[in-house]
Image 1 (cartoon, helix red, strand yellow):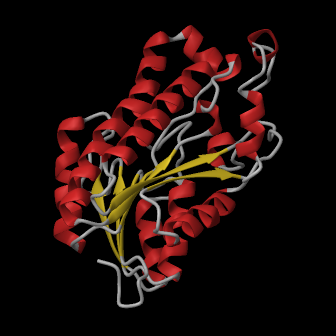
Image 2: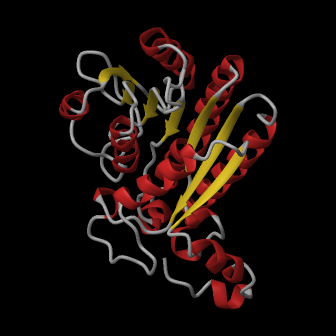
Length: 272
């Protein structure tokens, strides 16, 4: 439950090495969150192989080191194993989180892989796996989260989407199509939760300058993990809407309102 001041008290981060996810958690802890669960692939002493962090993913530093940093900020931190590609294990992740910290105020679905379109063109099996991580696994954890939050009667599921899914581009259509599916799923889930006390917050950043995009030239209207986190936490503190959407930076919203109208002949020439 939220604390006596109405601030978030408990947080579950799925993809516990996500740069954006960890920035959100740090901000929430500084604002009063006292109990955190990091669900991490290959959690030390617990996990097996999975997905959600690793080469090309939103991976940060080791989970133990990050848990130590969050503990230093005053939070009680737990690390549990999470395999995005094993949907049969997802219920246990939520069960474990609830056992450890009680009701979940915020669940962040923050795992994902980027990869390159050229690599996916050359290896369709790798493309299928990437789509399973970036879309299918989020469907599984999203439905599990919705069940928990609906039963509680409160809480927010934060879905880290992307402008890549707002209109899929030739330059990254495997990644973009998965994000388009995720975005549509999150919108529908938010509608399904209407009236339950729970809600979905969809975060759509543009190009994020970080480990996941290391070596790539930043696109216009780029942001940092910190900037995405600040916008996300600001929206979390506005708990009046059942479903909410956040573009980071904000200018991307109206920009894509126009870009959606471009003829396909022009759109297919767009760079990533």
